[in-house]
Length: 430
Image (cartoon, rainbow, N blue to C red):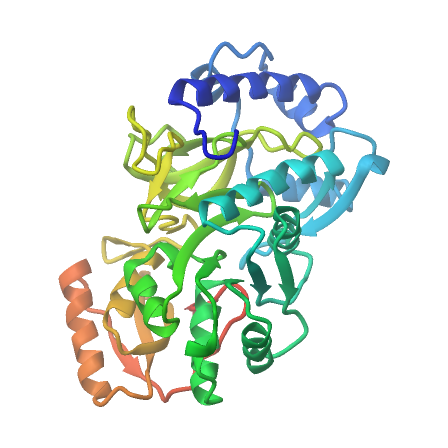
């Protein structure tokens, strides 16, 4: 895509089909994983249309890839080229399950860098910016891609690994960072630490906070909270996965709406219980095909992310024709609960809690009583909260009104619950 010129819906689909055909042709016979999988499914590789691909090609699951890596350690057989062609190693950062190892060729890495660069472009980041990365660099893909994409853009990239929150705040302010990259939770935590250490965030030059790793970046109450904590900064949401790369970015003119980068991905949404396509605009599981990650591809990969996907015949207000995910990532299929007959999504719980404007941190406890799933919540009121009991009572009423459920709310002292730099683990079972 030429910067500033957005392809039409027809052009997007034509490109996706062309890329799909090239990708599938490249997999045989070098990629043992997909050669075996597709041959066993009796799939012929002549793809007539995108609909034909969705109807005939089987889904790929994380458990399949995990099993493949266990049987063929350490990297499995989903490698299209000889091992000496690969230059990058990364590992999944999921909060549950066995981590996946992922290798990339230089070509696949460049393909993902272009998608991350598009995230920056959509956020209005330019070579004149200074980007601060408030996390420790581990084996997770997103850190490295975001840093190198910022470098490719020509921006000054400031690593924040190996230091504490107070030191990061000082580095961010002293070096005049204009863009902050972190999780939504950690952006809140940095503001908490600033208050504790009497660091005035009005001294910061941050104008954009790019967040990922959690659904919070598209939740209105969380956006409002961060806007209050970081004066003058705009929150910009994004999501991706180690297995697939950077998938979406927030619409520049519609906060809380994510655009799928369809030049790089073919997205579908299915009913997670039936595996059948979900009607447009209905919640379902996001399924992705990586169109250009040829060295270690995924065809129709079940991401586990719950979304509502929409495609419009007319361009978005930002000019893009890419599919949108209103509300961003709604939750995870393995996180969704049925409590007394009501479907509970983590994003809905977060929205209610953050909207109360008095909760500093929370933890959801899930238990099983007489074969029934029950849920309770612990909250930490903010230090300025004058009446914690009234806050808890208000929240119980809010949950009753929104979800038609009585959910017990318990107040704990400020600083009791864990804080997170990476993906927050607020849902506890047992």
